[in-house]
Length: 304
Image (cartoon, rainbow, N blue to C red; front, side, top):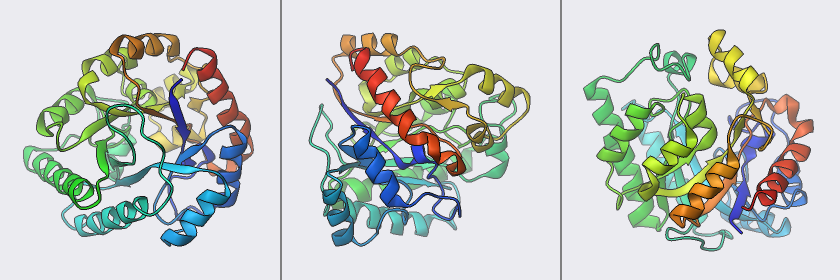
């Protein structure tokens, strides 16, 4: 069986400043109730930031952490000092709390690095032909920032950095994923490919997991409601508006072929960590427990 975690975004937790977020106690309680033993940290400042309190909190819910996440503007020079500070804060906490047990060749904890924050780019999530692209100067600046954040995580804290292409960010489409993989050597950072974000970008998840199999340190699994996705693209919805409309659904109920992904991972002999996610509006949190429970049961039913 594969080691499977969940993440606070399945309860609508992406922005720590959102006034509608559920209490973190509810997220941890329901994650454990659904059958998970590990969870991601979620956005910094959502779970307690004091390492001792966080450790006691996780232990009281019988949970460990598999990863922390940077989800912000990685292009801007002005924003970079904040990203450096957050990298130190997240990685320092990952050193002091219960961490998921090692699975696979590249064990946790991971620092998941995601570019997001340009409103114009986010508006055209999933639309390669219309999305704003970085010029060479901005691309190289972003890569330089990612390399430095990765260096801090790896060398100062022993945390494995993994880069996550994300709908609405500047690393989303196939050419950007390929360019990133070429720019970042494997010893500096791995990849965290996300089945739902691949699909959202118009890419076949099985093909792209195979294409970058040698770099897959960590995986995110989602499923996509095709009718909501088609309507979101046709209606030019930004990514989080599409999530609020229900574009992400429990695993096994959407467009992504998980038996085919299972067959691929078996062929590759891949045995790392998988985190299930289902982005949603936090005002729809009443459905989270049922959905994260169903997703885990589905994955187990098809051999994960």
